[in-house]
Length: 112
Length: 112
Image 1: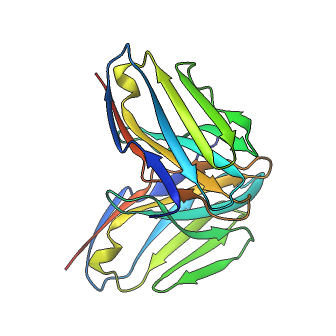
Image 2 (image 1 turned 90 degrees about the vertical axis):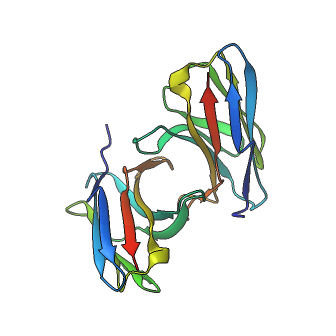
Image 3 (image 1 turned 60 degrees about the vertical axis):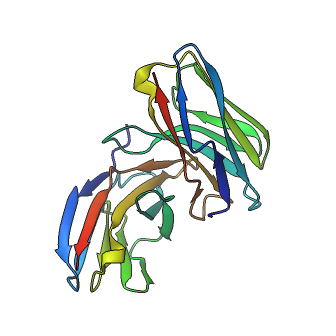
């Protein structure tokens, strides 16, 4: 059974704070790690797809790192804004097959 | 709009009804997926189709019957559902294993 764990479960921060979340996944048979942002009443939106150990990706104030040997990825948000409020999902892709196995997500609420 | 359209957005059905969920994408993607999200649970994969062929059935009960007539359309036929099948059903598509998934807005299903 594949287990993808995300922490924390939820996070409340003030506008301007920087924050980070963790995604843990199996370190064997790794192919890719995805991050998605899911705002209420909208569709999950792809943020990053990461495949290489040591990969770092950035999109505006959001960045992510990947460690495939130890099975974790961090998502960082610099200077959080209220519009960053969403659920952040990570998902693991095994070496064989193309299905995503999702974590339960981290709910972020940014107060102005 | 993400490019993946799901209809209907909301559906209430009785346990003896038969209904279908529809998903459509014109992104040129080769793979399509059905996911289920029950309250307080991670997104759970149901079915995967690659080039119209079913490649994954994640032990889904037979009261859920998928159909993929072509690479752009995916259906989920529902019959004799149970109240515990009430959930958000999300469709997604992807070009290949390298890219992120594009999700629809989902169908919120309530079984009464």
